[in-house]
Image (cartoon, rainbow, N blue to C red; front, side, top):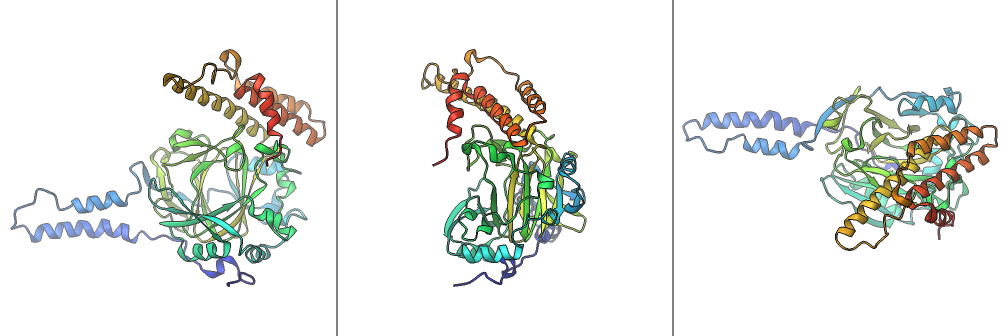
Length: 457
């Protein structure tokens, strides 16, 4: 049996992060020459009705990633890179990410007690303690419309397969929000703590009802070529991703770009109930359908036509020991240039609390609208019950959601002198109760709200 002690995950196999355009360029150079030479040498023959360039055109159609995307080069220097120790406070980081994502080094060297073990120690201990644990890996084929295949096996076998078999065309990807909870070593349960001076004394999500509370963090393993969907996060939280090993490419799209332009559709969270939150995922746009190409100053990838002249689209390469901070509402997609190991967090603090409140109320109203539309379709088919679907808000009156958000936030600011936990807790309760009324109506809202606080079985 192989052992992972004294050997880091990536030392087993490295793959080049660069993708080659050689075959693609060859098609454009060789095929036209071939077509011209072939036509000239056969000039004495009757010209066929089908042009000799048809094979070339068909090949181009096969190779082009999509008629709705265009190969585009983005500068690599647009995302700010800073030493986290130079940031004076949480307010400084909030001001930085108000303009877009950033990349931090030395994030766990800023505050004492935030690093319980080194990256090397975590990697060694993780693969030693969990090598026989059964996990599930997702294998994604690089074909439009292809569904992922899931395989279960020991972590040792999955990692070996990931290192040996993961490619751009068949990528291996593992994401777990529960694995570290079962660690034998207490330090492994939470090996890193986000620095309070940058992210707040505590995570406001810790005060949310259990059934809608996001997990503390998740562990991500990806082989070469693995990638996420193009997506935007639920709750519109602040995302944090720390890379222990490997190298990843990130592409960010600002929230000013309409969701419809990216074909982003609502998707329910897997790890908690969707009563107050829902993310977005694009099933039709893959920025990395063709392997990204990295030069010293640019990144070439497949951008949808709608993004060709949009300001704020950014790309950055994340290396070992660096932390990416994703502002609320920014769509993003990640590509593993090398086999990678990382930890990710979702944060709610004073800097993004209003965004989270707005998300909860907006989603509650949107979800109610969707349910009414579904009910009306069922009624047309003679399937819906009388009163079902229309019984949410009595009378079906319209509600000023943004006005409600502002009212809740004004109450929150009015309690500024109170102890932080109590102040935050009062606002969470007020916001979630309002969301339940928006979605279910005053009578049912009380019952649903109470159920959110019941512990998950």
